Image (tube, rainbow, N blue to C red; front, side, top):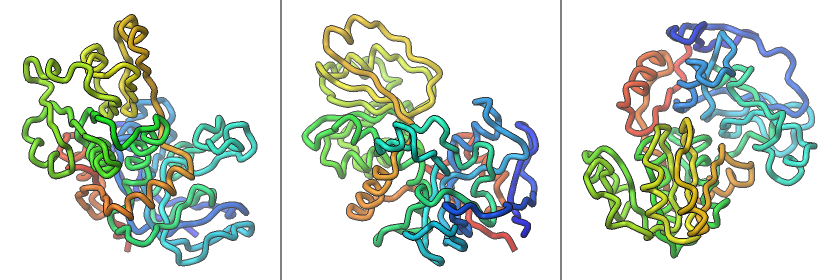
Length: 336
């Protein structure tokens, strides 16, 4: 059976219709008929082969929402017709130290949904069943796709770093990741400060739940915040004045990076003296994804999205690459 999709044949190319065949369904896999798929900045990075991982023709898409249409013979916990989501990871080995310790997202031989395989800009997509997640009641499936990459990427650090509801926290960047982080941390109970270079976003950022807004372009913007925050989550992928952000952290404060920044340059001595820590993370474990989905359902948290038909994938990518997306893009399946 041939599957219709949208693919690019080179980094600078446009998306065009592309057909492929899956072959035999593996015993531990499921096949998903795609309803919609989020567009993540990682899809753009992979399209351009920024990370040297891309194989062409390239079919992006790793924020998939759809319905299970086929089950491998060993899959018992899912059922045909179930509405599910699929994120960045499509397979892990299940036997390495990371996998058996509950951290399969750190498996050395894990497979990304769009790395060496065809992703969700297609009629159907396949993945190992353990990376396919039923949607809990209360989640709107039509806009849930971005939770499976953007959502878990900012939720996982909250668990990893033991963020407490009594703490004061900062979110750097108000984009696809940051707008979710603000909502999550506010619902978590934290006092939230948003850092942005765009003053035009302040009113909307406060509606998302931020208590405070800092325009980092303003002179002296950081002075009033010295040693006031317990945790800072960096969601941008551009160089920052790292020393300025470390100065905002309290002793034992934590700075966590999830944006693909090229490098960190900072003075080490202030970190040593204050016992400050720096960390980073990719997405998250299956158990963290389950927790995140339940948390979103309980608190009615949702991404702010713009929708395009999948046939307008080129327009959607232009919208994303020009920085106009507010705040995540979803492509809706309109294959005829």
